[in-house]
Length: 381
Image (cartoon, rainbow, N blue to C red; front, side, top):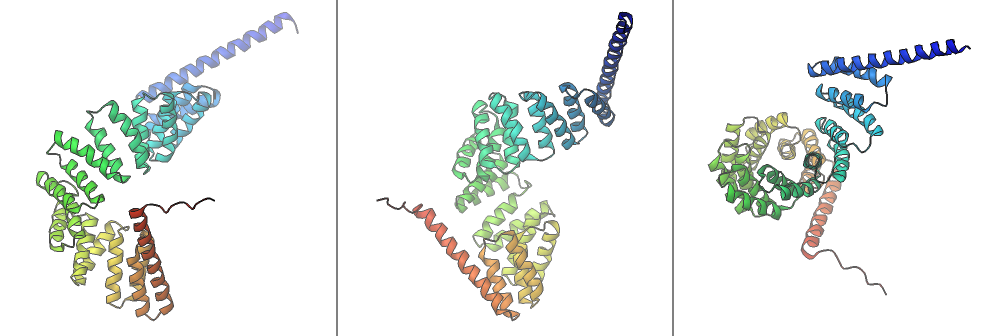
């Protein structure tokens, strides 16, 4: 090959490379324009093409994730961010974007890891820590959410929204005394906050301080009688105290505010079961289950009613559903034993009575451990 020929080939190679770069730059600019116009599907198609041409371009992959996220395609957005993070694993913006894609797609468990990595790299990044806390909260890890929110509240003690979230995390993780500490402070600042009184009432209920819980719900109902759940919560507390007339009044009020409140219907139906008004109870219980199929007390009560009506197959189906919703409760097993005995299945009835005895024994043991603590360790000679 002559020098002239080699030089020509090199020139054409460089020229083709420059043209390719110009073409990619023009495509990238076009994709950005479409992105700014909200034409996310078209922009994504161009970014996908660019990503195939330049698989090591973090900028292209990040923008691809952005347009997928804005189009509501969070799984594809997460895939794009993950590809970008393999190229730049320490990028905080990419970690946050990946976490947000999972978070907005309601995959809270997966959102935790990138947010945790971002917080570990930048402990003062309040955005990442807030999102980490909310991911824990969304995945039902309330103790972990509380630990992150404690740090956020310490950094911004005047932020009442964060304090409410922290209190709710304490509430759902069973840390009732901590809830009360927060809301005693909040209520001094905002004595007319119905939401604060409700959460305080829930904390008192968790501590079995039912009378104080009732007082908090009464106060909330006086402040905001249309507040969602305020009358149901008060009715439930009366129901726990077996004050069924007072409970019914509150369930009626809740249903006046929200005719589709499934739990209010279910517990009002239970009041009728206790009065042996099975027709009224059945209507309410069936309406409740049409709204929400996972209300255990409605299945239990329908099992009781069907047994009384000698509709044993229907009774057993309802009671088995109550067991599935909470296998640790003895009452559905006891009712199953009655239904089985009545329909001439003594062996099944005996099995259910045996399960009742086992659960009652476990309850007694759990109570003993709560009172006396764990047994001492065996002595080592």
